[in-house]
Amino acid sequence: MIRVGLTGGIGSGKSTAVAIFKALDIPVFDSDSEAKKFLFEDSVKVELLTYFGEKIFTEGEVNRKALAAIVFTDKKALTFLNGLIHPLVRQAINDWFLSHQNYSYTVLEAAVLFEYGFYKQVDKIIVVKAPMNERIRRVMNRDGISQEDVLYRMNNQLLEEELVKRSDYILDNAEHDLLLPQILNIHQELS
Image (cartoon, rainbow, N blue to C red; front, top):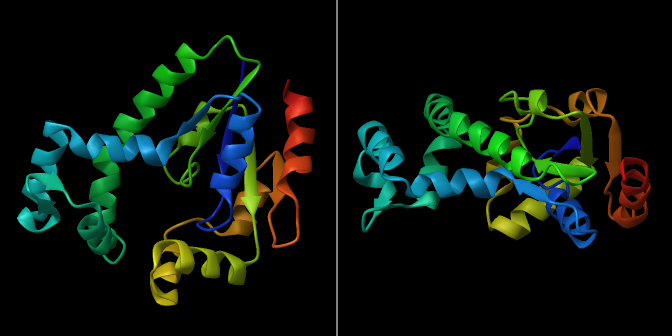
């Protein structure tokens, strides 16, 4: 089995690429969704309560919007959160790969593939890229946040040029580019 990492900056179109791979019956591990699940574990909630206090909790559960408002404006808080969650995600990735060995390839989707070492768990890397202005517009529309907030989040990720340098495949997802034919070419090569 070939383990493929899929990454790209915020708003690049990773979710669209993931949907296409899933439509092709390729298993995809969504690291962001898996990371969010850990926020419901009691041991994680205790650590978060100790560090952030009750301001990030609503009725005993982590309020992800309140948590995001803090960590996307405080690098120390983001480092703490990532240090807590990412080792758990890394283990979940290992377990997932082991349970999907009968496929010709699988896809690990991770916005922070390089930043937190998840790239070491894959054999090939795909990056989804799009022009900065389109990415900003997409995220503002999707998340209902300001341009300033989008730019702050972007500054916590590797530059797109760096992602492209480190990748085996590049998916161009500008407004008029079609992802499907690009993904079908990669799919044929990996199958």
